[in-house]
Image (cartoon, rainbow, N blue to C red; front, side, top):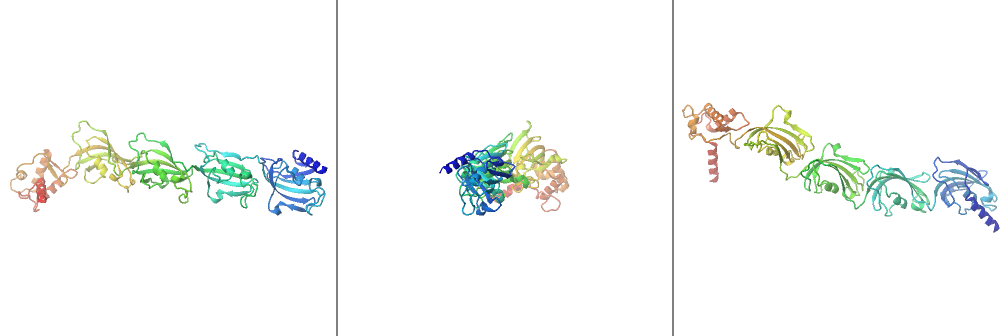
Length: 565
């Protein structure tokens, strides 16, 4: 009994002796491999895992943890059977290799060990340290990289997506999300992760990288994890946080650039054209309308888009730039979309609104300059000349009349220009300037035309250069004063009761020159007069007689009476 008490006191004294290379009292320690980095050394009270080979001094092996298929696990300084090993492991680093020579009185003493080790035998233990931890340990966190702009960090109940490399403390890798090409996705603080990760992820920002060392009791504990993580193993996680949201999140709208003026904001039911860059929270782009070289066009608020964009595009101004951050439940949800968008991904859309309109929108006219003395304005059937610049609402110039030698000319109401422009050119004075917005249903429609994109709202800058008043539809000539009572006699200049083309032409041109009548504009006068003559020369004999001559107004009135009958 006395001998055992003395031995226990001696072992207790050894546990507090500093450990140095070479002989330590009467054990010999050979540190034949020391790792370059040693962040922690074994102290009394620590728990350790190590592999070993036990041999006699002649090299013959009597025991090995490798043969048993499991590393040795125990607490330093708690009365191991072989006191010399307990002493010799102090100060050891993970991955360090030591050869500890233990004299008989610090091994099994004078007793034999299971018939394998004779009494009073010096033993040699070749060790490699795999793990160290202490019950007082917490998660050790090292921040490797922090993003410059962190507006939000992980809190309990947040859902996170992260990439990781996981290893044991000795560097043995046991898992990696990168190898699976898929992030680890989980709610934080709900017990779905090991406790050390639940704790270590708190406060992280998207794009941040952290390095965690997690003791076994905050990791996989006594049971370990499958065949990769043994029991009582510390684990090391290298984490990159890719994504973060909370199931209660709504969209976040950040205003990047607003136009100087905004006469109208978009509402549900509007048709919108916009450019976008779409990315994840980590900044990686997965789609862009610019790459497709065309805007994205759709109706707002009618369910044609993912819910977050449908909501985020309401209340925008033409020309506005905004960022819309969508939680997954307002984007593509847990399923993701295709190969580019993983499940439960937060999406970021940088939006540039090109234009929007409603099918009920009229032509919008803003008069920029108008003469105060204007008493004659353009109307349907008038022939006009005008200058114009035509552009998209983002300022892209499409066409300009300044590229040509003469102004553009058109007969209003003749169907030669888009309906919205025809309407915008009416009620204008010569010299007047206007800015006009033409919605696509009064422009080039959904298909567009040439370089005009489909469904584009067009902006016209107009200036009326000249105006020739027209005649009603179906007419070639109108009287501006009362026609002669005896019209045939006035036409029959030589009084031979027949009016040839020459007399007819001479008479009509005289009425026009004297301001008594007006020919249909936009056509050659002789051609118009020739058509008028043919209309009156009903038997096509080259002469108009009294019986053939009828005014257009009289013909229309007679036709109306027949229709009434």
